[in-house]
Image (tube, rainbow, N blue to C red; front, side):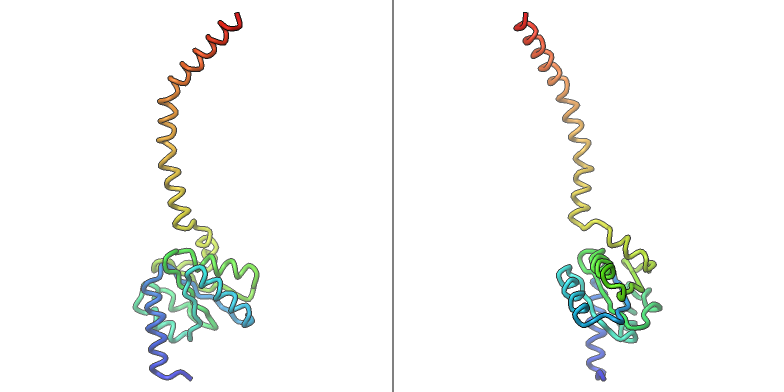
Length: 174
């Protein structure tokens, strides 16, 4: 049994993580072995995801004053909470990847920046590009018109060079 001070500490810890998070996922974990839970926590730690098993009443109080208050109604049953700090899709990636191999992990609640999403949206959220991938795609889109302009501007000079080379080759052949 937790004392009142321990409960307050848990609420404060989860609330601090929720306040700094960009997305949150609650998943039912009943039936997972200790080894599976340890593996899940290890993968979450590697991805920078805060993960914790919290009693539902404490979890509801922790997220009450954050943008994840929309999750309160879905917090029932044995749930593990996962919060993504830097990368919005990190928790979704960890949970969906783990759920593929372990059918006992069932995603129940998904929230992104204060909006409640359907549990099926966790897969779409997981497929979002990372920040670095998105920046790379943006740079490629920005670079394409400039590269095409350079090729277009250089083409008359290239065509002249090819024409002169063809004339030279023709005179040498004659």
